[in-house]
Length: 366
Image 1: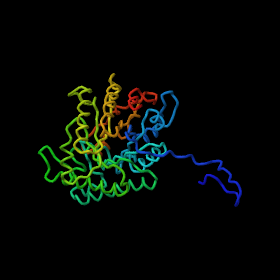
Image 2 (image 1 turned 120 degrees about the vertical axis):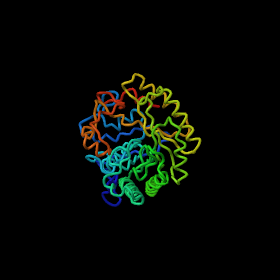
Image 3 (image 1 turned 180 degrees about the vertical axis):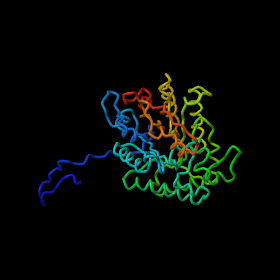
Image 4 (image 1 turned 30 degrees about the vertical axis):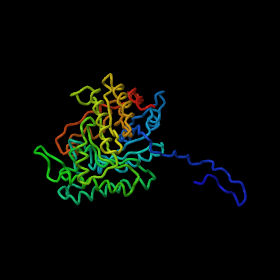
C-alpha cells in the first residue's frame, strides 16, 4: 500500500488514513537469546493465554521480548498428528516471529514426530524407500526445499537451520543409522553424511547466508570425535548445535553438568573455529535452584567467544498442559515405532500457572 494518495498532478498528497504498520527490521543478533515455542499454535488452540510480568495479557512473542528473548526456534515435522509442527503450522509461526522483529532458527526433524537419540523414525510417506539411500537423500532434499521455499516466498529468512535433531546415532533409521547394540554399522557415517548433506545443500541453495548445522544431545560430553568423523566423510556444517538439560540427569550435580558443558563448548569452538549454539536448554521449576542453575550457565556461556546463542526449549508450557497426541497411546506407538502408553506433561516449562514468565526467564535479561 502506498503511504499517500496523489489527488492529481501537482497537488499535495493526502496521507493514507489506514497505513500498514511498519514491520521491524530483523537483524541476526550477535548472541541469540532464544526460545523454542513450537507448541504455541496448539496451546493457543486449547485456549492457553499468556501474560507479561505485570499481569497484562499479551501475545507470547511480546511476553518473551520483554524477557530479553531476541530469537525463536521452530521445529518442522513431515506429516504430524493434526498438523501441529508441520510445514503450514511452522510457516504461520515463522511469519509472527518476523513481524515481531525476532531472528529465526528452523529445526528439521525429518520425521512425523520427535527425532532424538532414542528414535529417528522415517516419515510414513517415505517408509517404502527406507533401504534406498538415494531415494532417502532425495526425500530429504525435497522436503527441505519445500519448507524453505515456502518461508522465502513468505518473506521470512531464517538465520540458522538445523539439519536433523539430536542425531548422535544418525537419522532416518536404518538408512542413516551409525551403530546398533552390535557395534558400528558398516558405512553408517558415510550414509549419514550423504543424508545430512542432502539437507545442507538444499538449505544453502535457498538461504546461502544462513548457518546450517547438525545437532547433538548432551553438551557436557566430549562430542568432538563425532563432528570429526562426520567431517571426514564429507559432512558440511557452518556451526554446531547442542542440547543441555543440567537437571535431567543425576550422575553429577547441576553445577558439575554446567561446568563440563561449558568446557566442552569452548573446546569445540577451539577445535573447529565455527559458532556453537545451545539450541536447547531446560531446567526443572520443581527444583528450588532451577533459576540460579540457568542463570549461572548463561553468565559463563556468554563469556565464550565462539558461543553465539542459547534457546530455552518450550518455556511457555504451564498448568500441566500437554499436546493432544500425548494422550493417544496407539498414535504414539505408531509415531515412535515402539510400544507406548500415554505421556505426561513436559516438566521443564518456565512460566507460572497464570501464563506469566517465571523467575527462570530472568536469565535472558541483559
